[in-house]
Image 1 (cartoon, rainbow, N blue to C red):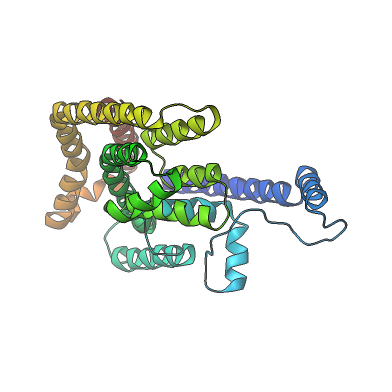
Image 2 (image 1 turned 135 degrees about the horizontal axis):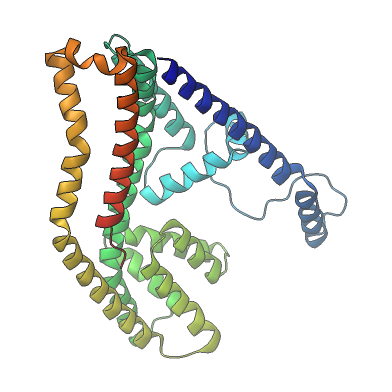
Length: 324
């Protein structure tokens, strides 16, 4: 128990230090000398002179329906990352709804583990694990959406190439692709088309779409379009070649996924087996497993097992994840 208390104290100290550093970095980025110089340059370039209001040259998404909460969240870097994750996942949640769901998950975790026959520190750790449930779900939705978009990219590149050969302009092609292809890729092309209609330069609209869809293949397609607009060339032929490259890479990725299926299944089994055995023993014979947190030697063994388990999971993840 003493070892658990010291570990909790170390983590608490680290959290306080990181919190102080985060506040300091936020203050420097918003009120520091560099931020003030940038604000003055924007004022001069926009012709506002000595006005004191902040100048925003970017469209900001609302993080909350309440103005006061929205202003607070826009000053928090974590809220920006969460919003980016929600946009890439294609979710309808706002940032404040995401944080409320995380707090609700934490409350549910506390209610579940409150009466478990475990040490207080372990129960708090298990309860804190519930707070990441909305984040895990958003990450899974993001991965599934990006996989679907990646599978649609070859068809989209061929579609754009055929439309260009037929004599359509690229802006009209964006509208055609947005109407003819299926979701979720068609929606992203419609957003880019609407931004261009509202007066956003095409390069900025395409870069914004690349930020919403962080796929290397899509960046290749966008770079090819922008280079062709600057230097000329046969864009239809370039997009056809990119389509063939994407199809070849997807085929190779499928083959690698099949060959590594056994390793991924073994990693899942080895990673979940200790938790399954521990939970089963806790239900069937709690007095037998309680030695792990009631006896000092058992506590040290439990911490050593946790460290080795984390190292093993990280090593197996590195082995089975093959980048193409």
